[in-house]
Image 1 (cartoon, each protein chain N blue to C red):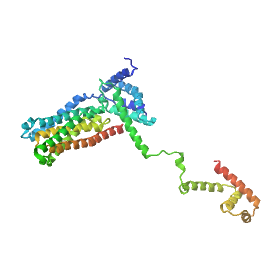
Image 2: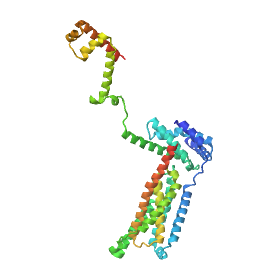
Image 3: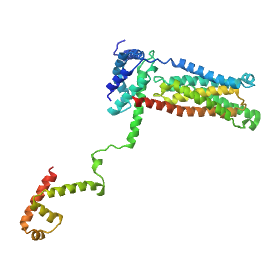
Image 4: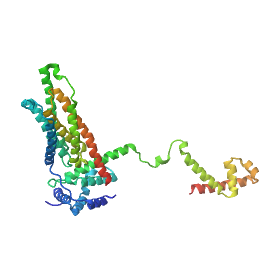
Length: 221
Length: 188
């Protein structure tokens, strides 16, 4: 097909489109939706009994705030990355917050060790945490695919990685409100591990789904 | 600002795209046709080969069409166009790179010159068939001379004894037959 004929065909079948709202607005809407879903789950399972006492500890409150901040920044990054004319460096935005959060969990492990001795680092299993974070990330990742589908031909993998990071961090915050995990090492392994796993799954599966969708559109034309 | 400076053109294209988003076909048509040289220039920085460049231009147009809702009229349009074109050029470059690693272009030296006599046997058989047909077309005297002297490899004396013609006549017939065959097979 000649390029001029393609232009003619495109003009013939074009219709009006609704412009996307600015990325910050869309990120805010997305965050509102995710917070509502997670809040509903938290209310359903009930907050942990010692929540007020926990939040009174500055260290734990700061950890939860860091996780929430990372979630917000990751959502902002995802909606910017989905647009062609924004820098790929938006992907870096949530990384300092994420690194600080992981570092604070690591520091918590050291504190537990100092306070309790080697017993403070005893690692149990908490499949519930993994299940909660993954179980939330996957369906919400599907909703995110819908919200970010226009990213398909541009940067599918970084967009989905940032988006899934946002979801998983929000899930971790929700989990911290409902669930008993006292040992920092448990949080480090089961929360941060689940977040990383979710991002890996979201980036590969989600990125691939977006890329396939983009290829389909190209093939139809 | 003048329309022909890059910034002026940017403003004009941005306005056309905004109108196209609202459903204005003529604005869309004008924008697409005007920005084709720009898209080609962006893609040529990443791709060689006019066919590949043109394929990438078409991929770019399709992507642009698919995500035209992502253009924000308050921002310059050329970075938006260039980013899409670069993506498609890179995709195309990767695809041609993969193809290049798998395939070798055929040229004249590869199509016929194969090492070893057996690989060219088909060719030889075809040639032998042509020679037999050409011999069959010769006048009776010449055909007989070729068959006895060249195909059955008799000596001139043996052939003369078998046919009853003189050695000289056989020599002449053979000479004429070879000449006729050469004209027929070589001259065609």
